[in-house]
Amino acid sequence: MSDFDIIVYGATGFTGRLVAEYLARSGATNWAMGGRSLSKLQEVRASVGAPAGTPLITANADDPASLRAMVERAKVVISTVGPYQLYGSDLVAACAASGTAYVDLCGEPAWMREMIDAHEGAATASGARIVFSCGFDSIPFDLGVWKLQQVARERHGKPAARVKGRVMAMQGGFSGGTAASLKATMAAAARNPSLVKLLTDPFALTPGFDGPAQPMGMLPHVDESVGKWVAPFIMAPINTKNVHRTNFLLGHAYGEDFRYDEMMVTGLGEVGRAAAEALQKFNPLASDKGPRPGEGPSKEERESGFYEVQFIGEVEGGDEVRVTVKGDRDPGYGSTSKMIAESARCLIEDVEGNGGIWTPGGIMAEPLVGRLEAKAGLSFAVHP
Image (cartoon, rainbow, N blue to C red; front, side):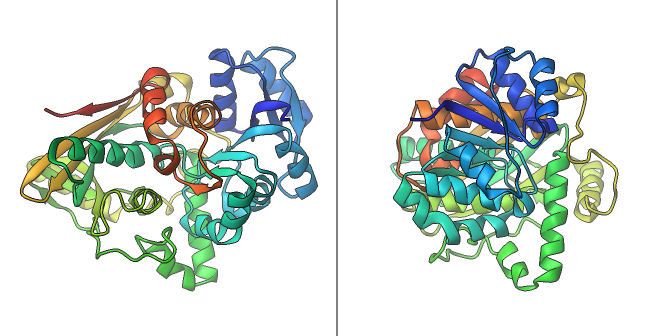
């Protein structure tokens, strides 16, 4: 019998603190905060307004025994401790062995594939439901495509074989943790060039299945489906892999010929073109500007952020389906902290599911969409 419904591991980090604050303010009970430092956990508990009796658990990423002791006390562990390829492997192993559910914010496909290969069997046997990428990468995209495909089947009796994800607007960037993960991934690829093939493979997370050639989404152009210039989107390499894994986990409900890409909409005319070309050349790793892990924007900046993503599905025969997903906070922090918290709650309150390594869309799409709309400031709007 678990002591707690939820343990937030990494609660002393910037995003972990936001998750703890969200749980405290939403009236969650029977949860705990975990991290390396008891004194820092005590400070966070006081600063986020959690009840004084909220339990605190010390555990360290480099101490597997402490991780095992922690996960055995929880129904689900929320991990915000990244880069996951540096600090996450023993925690996943502990959850897979113990049967404890797990959610994280991972956008590191090489590590995710390593975890799938190493622990899917153990998680399936123990009943542990391991769910990666429960933040901005990749819930709005994963569930946006899922929602579109539900509509396509309802209206036309078949899925859309071709779907475009187009980021129409976004205020607020990706997190310092995401930037650190990108840098760690690039460093790993430099040490091990064989990772480059995996990082560029759209089907890197679908072991045993290679689908059709995919649109690359790398060249600026005028996209007639939105009537504006589009440019490469920095999160596309992880989001697209997760969307294909969801299709794989759902028994290819989108079809084995499914094609998908994501791009950022930059605008009309020469202004849109110039912005698209600038984005194509932009290297987020070339500068130390922006938040570092553990840092982030102010409350006002988080609350003034937003995003809007439109999904355009082309159904065989010429029919089209469109769904727009919107979030009411900045994507990297404000919205992400709500999404991962509700993902954890959804796993233990709304779905049973089998053990294994999942995507949000693969194990809890329908109930999670409902939760996110009711509680987390997201909307999934179907166009007429």
